[in-house]
Length: 313
Ligand code: ATP
Ligand code: MG
Image 1 (cartoon, rainbow, N blue to C red):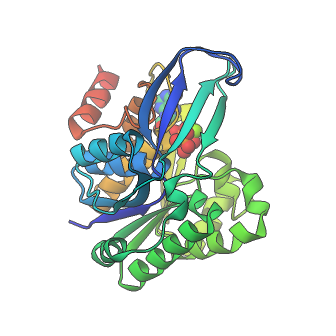
Image 2: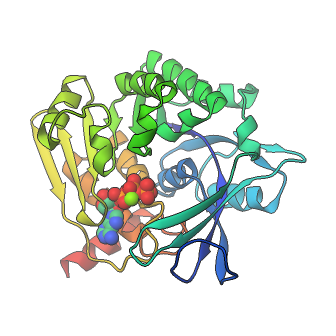
Image 3: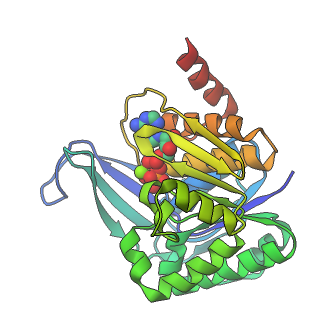
């Protein structure tokens, strides 16, 4: 089976258990939960039994260890997570506001992952993997961005495939330093996984159908549009499929997009019928929002089937 690689920040998340704006007052918190978009994504890939690995860098601390142990237990090759003595793993505090939006407080500016550089283990992983999942947010850090770009070029040149989740706010696209690498990644992308308005990042002058058509015309094989609590849609040349949202109680939506993407990629790589892969990924996203903690709701195949059976019954 093809092996999937991703590269990026691993951190812990600490979640406020009461709703409100920010962290000025003392309040009940839970965590640390394993987190980081690439970590959540690759954990979901591992849970579905697809060979996979992550390249990252953490401190020699419990926040790093909690991630490494979880990812290893869920089937991810963690040999590419470098442990940096005397440095610290990043963290993020999140609090939900009454309107459902999120207040984030990040401690990642000086995290161990900020000093990530290619090393013999990461180079060997790039050489041994067949698929790279790219997070657009990687390009806000120049060294990480350079590693991701190099890995994408090497894997693509060898005949491998690339999936791309922009994972960005549209404002960031106005930064010219981000624009060039994102355009270069899009040109290599086989599977594009935008969320909501990210569909228009590269095709701003179109409606949804026009943007999809223009992106497919660029050579992207599959586009999967995540629509949050409204479900998801899949587009290929001559094919459209829609997944209606599965009714669930949304407890913590952070990480749903990564669980969705990791599940979709696993089935897409196995050659599962695209509409069926979409149905399974939609279930992975729905289950993810029912658990507190961004990585706590990643799913095994048995758990996805249970969600889908519950929906029928
Ligand atoms: P992230 O916060 O991780 O960046 P995202 O914005 O990339 O998330 P979403 O669109 O929020 O991704 O969620 C991904 C998928 O999960 C949706 O397309 C849908 O299939 C499922 N999903 C998300 N929220 C809900 C919900 N409230 N009910 C049912 N399914 C949901
Ligand atoms: Mg979302």
